[in-house]
Amino acid sequence: MTTAPPEAVPYADGRLMDVHRPASGAAGPAPMVLLWHGRGPNERDVLRPLAREAAGHGLLVLVPDWSADRADGGRAELLASLAQARRIATGFGGDPARFVLAGWSMGGREAVAVATHPDTPAELRPTAAVGIASHYSDPAVTTGDAPLDHLAAGPSPVPLWLVHGTADEIVDIGHTRQLNAALTQQMSTVRNLELPTDHAGVVMTAYSPEARRCLPATAADTLEAGRRTAAVLAEAAGRS
Image 1 (tube, rainbow, N blue to C red):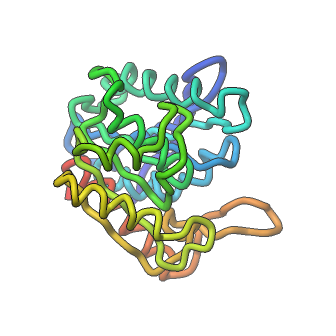
Image 2: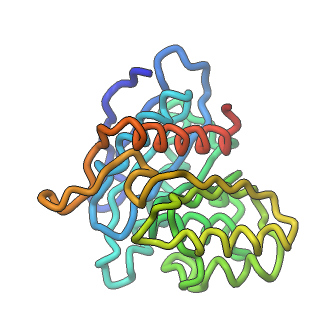
């Protein structure tokens, strides 16, 4: 599906967020997804292939830059992007009542942590969350504790979707399986998708040693894996 190029808007102190509008012809208001990238600083461009694909499902997709190298580990930027996404959603045709918080790699842990933590304010809690190729047993910078700990102690307040590549050599798939098992034991609403790809492929990219970052994928099997991840975002947002 063809979508317009993203519009970059500030969300805090000049920090930028890409706005991927829903595909032309999609009925609005559109479900919205806030999508956090991983540990590498300022990598909203890395998630553009996945964001474009998700926008093709009729979603409003917001992708901010943020940096884990900040003194607070990126906490302030992540939470500022969340608050700003809530504020600007309707202006871009989004529906805050259908709001998915998602993230890849380190961003996935943060998304699941914020979405499910007992202390998250009601006005910031999303309606669903998606963790992509992440691990959940380390403390999140946004909440201060590990998502696995509080989700093993009680059910999630929102439905969760988990995606991981079976060939991931950066973050072992066992981390996602561990969280899925804990959620299932607590009778939480959870969907778990395992894809035949690696850490980069799950977001429709391939790692380039020369560029030292992930670039848009060209291989057919990697593109297909990314499309399935985008379909998970759409399902979590209520678009199948």
